[in-house]
Length: 330
Length: 251
Ligand SMILES: Nc1ncnc2c1ncn2[C@@H]1O[C@H](COP(=O)(O)OP(=O)(O)OP(=O)(O)O)[C@@H](O)[C@H]1O
Ligand SMILES: [Mg+2]
Image 1 (tube, each protein chain N blue to C red):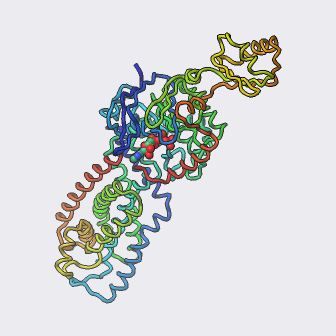
Image 2: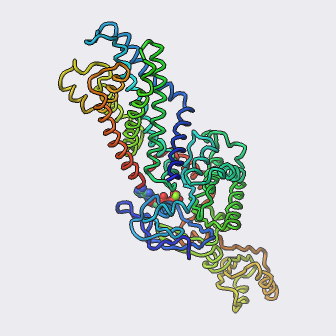
Image 3: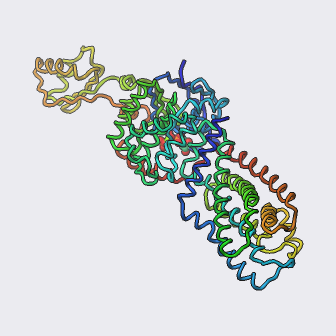
């Protein structure tokens, strides 16, 4: 039985449809990623799963509890790290975690142990008694992730968990998320802008755009759906090489153009020696070879018609995260 | 049930910690009432005499105490707006805890901070020569807490429907400040035009000030039973309203 199951769930704000009849299922122990451009509806979708927003129509269950009719059951089963900061800055790291543990009925005698455990994990144990307002953005993010884990949730929702973090911390958090799944069988549902994050961390990815799921598959399945690698050969006679290679089953498509030959094929790196041999036999001189394997960026571009530029986003996003923290919540 | 008590306790504790960490809030909360007390008590007190005798300073002191509680409480309720703006509210809203418990924890916490402010004011008053019979203190605190929790709930209700602090400031100017003025805190109500008297009757703070005046001075305009009755009714209304409006925040 899937631990998250949404069927035709829709959220409308007045006449605007932010999430449009989304259906998906996540199995226990899976790390599931929701990938989409700004405004795609990722946060709105998560908000409905965590009972913060009511669906306009459709149904969703988390850990067997219906989000509309049994929100309390859902809340007990989940941990969530919101996209926007949700810490009390006047309290210390420890006090924030202690309050959270109490709200989630962590037994009194276990609170301190667990708090120290998660603080160590995010390397904030030395700052436990400092007020959150003295923390950097990355430290706050780590503290929030730690907080989401204290009560050992069955499902952990992470809305852009590593936004604005440095690559080292990001890797650290990925490791921890993997460990959670391995050791505690926690199901993780995350949204992200980082292709690398989606690719290395997630078992399955759904691409969402304009509130609709466009594609859902494993990262390699998504990349394969684009139809193989691209091999670019610079050579003396592209046409000749092209006709020489005709009949090779592994080559899906070939296009000669001024001084270059573009091939589409599966497992490109394994085919290069064979292609070089054929070229030599045909007397074609190859001056350079480059192989491009499809990335999630390509997948994303292919299905949404847009690219996600990680560099641009990280600075723009961390700024937005800051601005949002100050903005009121509706 | 036990779980809800723990949640209420921790939310109460949070309000207390935040309050104690904010020196400016502690000082600021009794700043204006202090000046009112000094200006009225010693300024006007020197030129007016009350009908029944007694010093004007003693008369105005419970009114100033009412002022401290009123503003302290309402601003504690306003923390809901700050929580909205800083996102912390979501953390509590998504927790497996009843909305009523969240409101109650906030209300008890806010009321406690208001009562602490009131205690500081009583201390200042004693130094300034206001007569505060020691045996009245327990009953006085009880009335103070009743008044505070009712007005914190009013603050939470208003904060639940307000978008930001500017809107809240407006409410303070057009609702809370008049409440203070019409409550008979600074002048005896018998001596004002009838229309103002009627306004004072619908002002819940009137009964809070009256009750504290009875406790401190032995007698005032109404009976203690009436005052407490009205205050309890007002409390019931504001807490229900707070619970109702707070529950509606999420969407
Ligand atoms: N409370 C609201 N009222 C009206 N429109 C809203 C509200 N919340 C979200 N929207 C709209 O719904 C759409 C989806 O927003 P959402 O926050 O879910 O996007 P997202 O995929 O999380 O984007 P991002 O990557 O920027 O976080 C946006 O167009 C947004 O403007
Ligand atoms: Mg979002």
